[in-house]
Image (cartoon, rainbow, N blue to C red; front, top):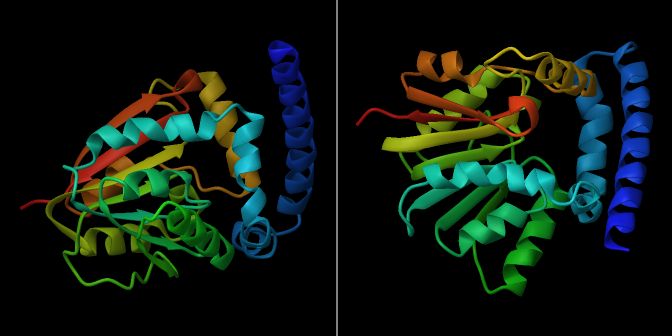
Length: 237
């Protein structure tokens, strides 16, 4: 029964993926990425916040599992950590048990949902609705700035990273988890990157971008065909 349910879940998810992919390819042929994000993804992301975790349920929690490698790069417990693009707050709630947290998301629905989840567990975080290119915190505020599967949605990656570095303390780390091309150039990762680009994402290698902002950078590929990577940049002391 367990295997049957898992098979049914994968069939439903693949069917839904095919439908959404077809719709997005059709939309992409008729508009640019910024317009697609503003009129399609932003609306879905905000209005369907309460159902967002259902996407992860369809894949047996894969998205959440793929965030986990980022956690070993975080500083000591009790440090100040900013999460950008925290979505439904599943990871944010976990981190709030160990760190002094803050978070920014562009969707009011996601902020409201995460505030509710934190309150139910007696946890707190400084959550803000806003744009990553204009963070509402002072310079050198955080020991770490974390973003998982969100950076590829930012049209102006240079301005976004500049703000992330600005609010980071000397010696702190910027940690970005995202999908994209694998470093070994394998064909399957390339295909998946092209698929995500069709969805409206911006496929990037964050290493040269971080280096241009003066960070010392490491990158680790993992996940299916190495199509997910964590990039860590350390700010000079």
